[in-house]
Length: 156
Image (cartoon, rainbow, N blue to C red; front, top):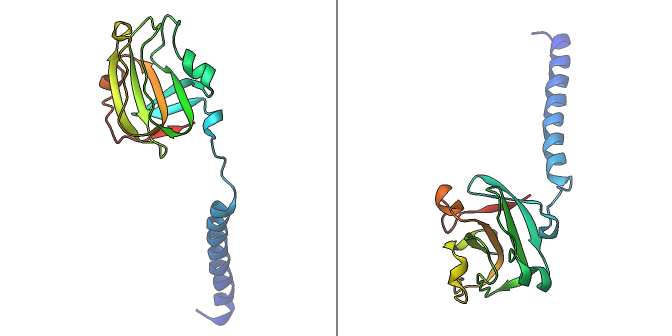
């Protein structure tokens, strides 16, 4: 190869390297859109995307799913607490059984109460440890999707 032909080749290599480096820099420095828990519309859990109603304050958390007649397979309610705490739940005024899933602040399943029935009231359920979130879904969801403690979730 002569000197005349090598200059364009070197320029092309340097240009290609700059493009690759630039791409990686842009990926790391462009702010990524983070989903805030108070804006979440879906929870991805056990490979399933669940459309959630949010219970963000004391009033909506006390109401929960009480009084509703049913939930669809891909629907649920996500309780978002201000800080991790010892959250116990019961089935007061519920009309159908549900699975309840307690989730840590780092978005991992801590405890699962499967098939909580309305007639279990006034019994309460929950783990001994603090949690930041509780997801309520249709009864059977945990078994159908092989959900287990330690599984991660995503807020979408």
